[in-house]
Length: 187
Image: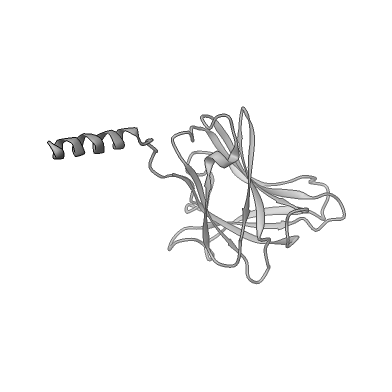
């Protein structure tokens, strides 16, 4: 009788736990070409494209990458401007439903020779709004940053349109540098 009761209690505990989806890779950049792993385009953007004192340029890098093969996304940014400056990298998510997932994961590394900011902003965009989260603690070693999706404070994650990296002059502790991003996923 005691074994039956324990089995019933254990079964009810597993039923009451929320079910989350397995890992889904949004962009691993391993092909060295567009689109990302969910069919979305991507590229760098500038707040003011005619102001040449601020810029962000994206490129695939086959030397500095997370893992043994493929590429990473190299973001060379500069927000050292006499004008208000921000720029970054956008990546279309094509309406992917992220509600079955708990975390957004990305591997990040700064460039030892060029320097990098230790903090930048990540945005998720949906038709209901824009959620933001500040990544902090970036250095010259590969690190995986795991961000709870609930930290973006979006009313719904069912129709995610865009993932955005933002370098801001008021936040960046190195106003120009290089950040590498790789293996962006949800879990």
